[in-house]
Length: 167
Image 1 (cartoon, rainbow, N blue to C red):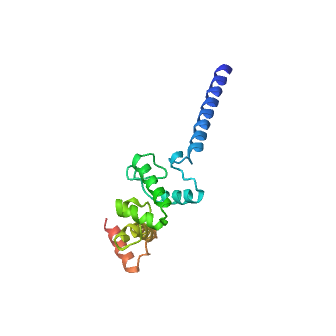
Image 2 (tube, rainbow, N blue to C red):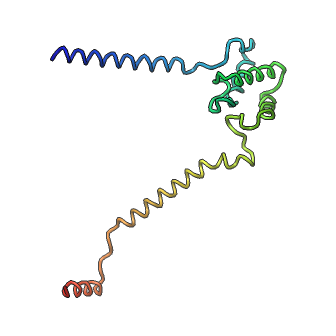
């Protein structure tokens, strides 16, 4: 009996230790970016600007990652393009406009606030407010339906008594 308890306890300890190691490995590798050492600019100021711009551009292959996080070849090409434009002296806005002109507005992780993106910007809050309104109306309807019925008037009580007596 004691041996089986010790064996189960040992297995549980191994399982917990394995889970702890897996979580630690995942947390340690979390902040790793896909930028390769050969892409890094020697000027720390320009590199910081390049990282800032890259974090706002979508990888067109992965679509849910920035080009700074993606390891796709197209993302690498875009990172290099951003760095080339920076070293050429372009401003952050000029680089962003250049990439948007070349790949379309889909390349921006945070779309611009323009007339044709109004639906994109306001759809989520509108759906949330609509859902909230539905919940409030349903709650009110439930509250009124759950209230006790009104008392019978004298006429109604007489009619009810007559119906019950006739049985």
